[in-house]
Amino acid sequence: MKTSLRNDRFLRALRRQNVDRTPVWMMRQAGRYLPEYRASRAKAGDFMSLCRNPELCCEVTLQPLDRYALDTAILFSDILTIPDAMGLGLRFVEGEGPVFDRPVRSLDAIRSLAAPDPEVELRYVMDAVRTIRGALGDRMPLIGFSGSPWTLATYMVEGRGGHDFAVIKKLMIDEPAALDAMLETLVQSVTSYLTAQHAAGADALMVFDTWGGVLHPDAFVRFSLEPMRRIVEALGRSCPGVPVILFTKNGGAHLERMADTGCTALGVDWTTSLADARRRVGARVALQGNLDPVTLFARPDRIREETARVLADFGHGPGHVFNLGHGILPQTPPDHAAAMIEALHALSPAYHRPV
Ligand code: CP3
Image (tube, rainbow, N blue to C red):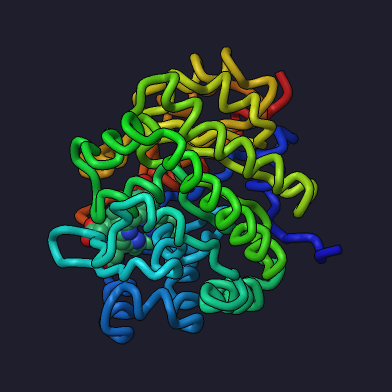
């Protein structure tokens, strides 16, 4: 058994237990909007070198925690470590984002994909988890994460960030069984990757399904939801009791089916009202979200009002983890994130007092 954490608000809220105030963290909380992050990345040379250096990963993971009163750390890494470990040749191109030198473009290429061993090809990620866990001690929890099989497949097949997703959607329509086979390899990869992150010290696990929302509902169920459901089911056996958060960007239409997977919590973006989400699934899962990250470009007094609006939208009682609805943007003034967190601390205790 792990020693108990001094701050367990985040884990309690995920389990819909009572808390003194709403816990908060920000997707991409360690990132380019922080000058100290940019300095660490410069020390590493580039983003992937930063990801491959456990000491520097630990340094940047802790940076937002030293600056703001956040309630959880999240491993500093990327979802594209799995396809990189499969040999696809990942590069980050300035101004364009991630690019693969060898995208998956044939049935033979799909057949030759193999699930990486997390303690071999992805050992640098597990070393980062162990280093961060050691540095955090009992201060607060640590989130481990992965991309969803569908979202990883979009990058692997398209070879870069998608726009219309024409290449993978053509594969989906022409060769659905081949796409199923590729997603099956990714289910195994993600399951063993997350299981190893938990064994290395991650207290909660999150699956980022950034591109599930670009699919027709039937295609979403087969190619995005079903692989995630199988991962949740397998994690229930490999790491019993560990909270699992599923986040499909633009997935507001699918919340009931997502809650049916047996996950602990759902991430919700700003295109869905938390009140509506809670009415639909709130008795079964916790909800995480959902301030539009662009709100942090506005004036601090408006940021406070918008933070109040998100809290009121979820309403009274446990089961809410405050977050942005997607990653914090690189142009965000760091003081504006502070305004959001201070407002959350001031306003949220009222939502947890007995009525
Ligand atoms: O939340 C955190 O603080 C943990 C770290 C984290 C990163 N990426 C660091 C990162 C997490 C959880 C991710 C997930 C991720 N990566 C997703 C899913 C979440 C989402 O945003 O929808 C996706 C789609 C990726 C793939 C990826 N990695 C993209 C599209 C980019 C941006 C490329 C660009 O140039 O804008 C990255 C790079 C990346 N991952 C950065 C960070 C801090 C910026 C890299 C840099 O320093 O230049």
